[in-house]
Length: 149
Image 1: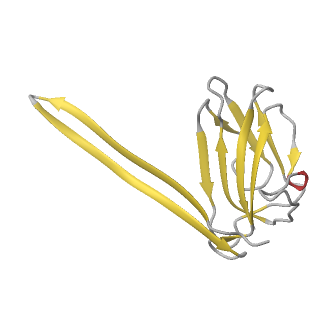
Image 2 (image 1 turned 135 degrees about the vertical axis):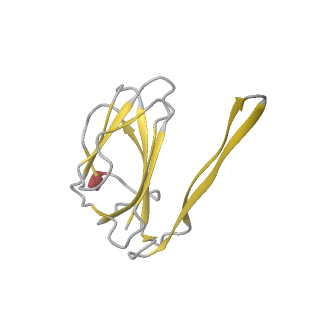
Image 3 (image 1 turned 90 degrees about the vertical axis):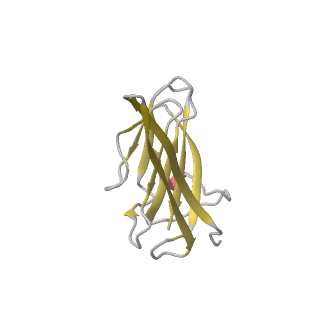
């Protein structure tokens, strides 16, 4: 299996205004970040993508029990990116991961998300025994997308 084109993009475009003394001042922010991964294990490289819906029932899930986007088992050793998406319109969930350096004990508000990229060659060390968990309303699920090498 070879990793095809994998790109993570985030963008912020904002305009703020302030009226004072008959004039209006504007502030602008326009920034974007694109992180791309090629197939491999070095810097800016990865081998597979895991896309899972993690039930928010406080159960630890070992990475070894999950499959990649092709439905295959994988033996990744490095986390290169993580995206967390809480699709709930009303419930908060908290994400936990026991890998040193990974996002841990992160609250994701209803409709919120988190994107964390680690495009270095080493990434964050993970193993099959690395666990992830979502605490929240048991009927909800947190979408977790991992880019792994």
